[in-house]
Length: 310
Image (cartoon, rainbow, N blue to C red; front, side):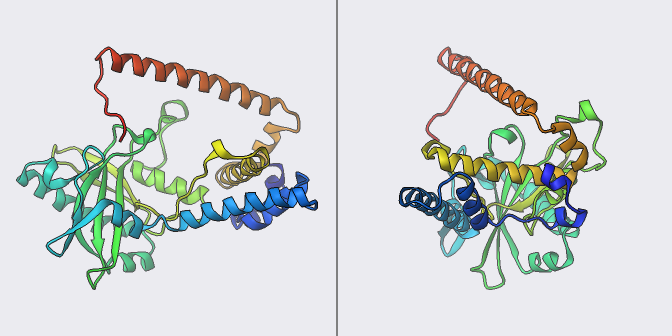
């Protein structure tokens, strides 16, 4: 944050991370470059990083298509794997399924107006095929999430989009309502502001459900080169590098979306903020373990129904 606070506004906006350069620079800083043993350690780090990047580049619509769809009588459709993914035809009676399918089809057309014109032109090359409900991650539990299958003009070029329900931010009652009336727009605006590169199909809209209630959604590709790393197998040197990469990315997001000078001044040059974050993280981890133990007890006593091994 201190470094970004000293940069020009445009420099902050155009800031990008060159992973190769950053890993090499941190290798020098951590004393991992130069000696034979250190070179071997850095080689292992780089090899693992290259594998993770290569894996992320395979996480696209084609990979998702192979996992989530099947071909029946020459036609691609979503597989049935409840509760993780359920085609609309199995989820609702035929008339309600047709109604919701039509509204989600309309959503595709109307949401495109929130995209750049060139990306809207690209989306128009695809034809809507089918829809299914898909279970979402922990942060979105309890909200609606749909996956939409589209194909290109030749019928073989797939595109998988995800429409996720967007609700009011949990921070709203503390800091005031969002400037955006549509909560999907709030999410999209935040991603555009903080991310160096956002999904090209990112957009938002509002649609009425079969219960007559209007809900806000944001739409994006189901997978667009998202990647993660397994921190449990990292050596200390790699963990230090990964931590620095995460810190830089977070700092850039705050620098673009907030007052970077004020934030850097608040953080200061002492370890006070660092120590506070460590204390909070340890306390939060302890609370998470207590919550998980309570969940397991509730399952064991039959107070809740769970499905394991999904």
